[in-house]
Image (tube, rainbow, N blue to C red; front, side, top):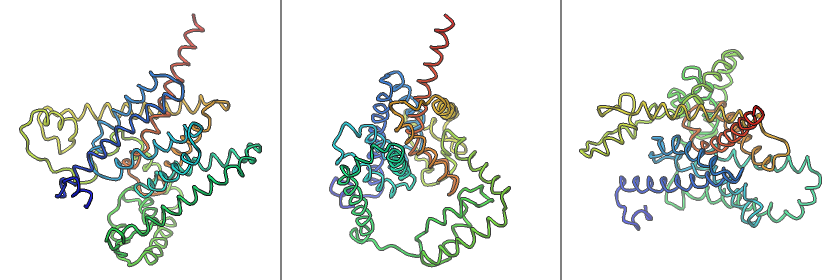
Length: 378
């Protein structure tokens, strides 16, 4: 609030609007980084603009972009991490790797799944050292960088732990929820692994993290024994469908904090609203949300198909082999994260740029293949 008062924001509504502006700026920077990353792959402006177009449809037109929450606030982190990794040989290693670690840690504190990108980079780097013995010689050379990364992670962790106290807040241990809670909720049959209010009430009925952890593990164990492999597999199937089958990422189906509709006589505002509000919130005559929803669904399904095409077309001697490995490993990690923990399509939001990166390269490969096919016929 001190920062907000310094720049003239004295009311809560004003603070929210200020954060919305910050998110819009981060969203714009992410779009620029995405364009640069895609262009760097094949030096193709056409492919880069294709990716930018997908970003406009899936992110800019998304209702989630305007919601002040961790999803939109964390959007830039995975993309910026990939940008640093892609340009790791262009900048000083003492800047690149600590920056990746810093973004990974604080991204994790905003949205836990963001850390998956950092894990993917560490895994691919370690695999390269194992498969390429000549790189072991560089371990001693890079000892300083590795040490600095560990220091950055330690300092970040210490800072985070002391942050509430420094800001004058006191955490309520009865409201603190261990990660096992979201694992338990991810295996509830009633909501197919989605948000389940009775699981929340169950967790909050216990005091302290350790007591909650013990109770949650007991309930999760009983639940898995009761379901058996077939019912668990059925839950996983429905979870995958609910998470990956919606190009709007469940816009309008969860969260009631944004649904208050303020009256206005501004015709342009009414026109824009007609593309955003959906379902029972189709508040204006001549609603256009069905257009937004249809275009987003087409773009999303197309992106997923193009990702498969790129996976088929990857060559082992590709110059960008490492970064493709990081991208696919990140998506695989995200998939496992979503399948194990509470299921929400919205949780894919911060990773949409990574999906677009791969999808854009799939489009490039598809166009290249079609051109080759046409050339052979001629």
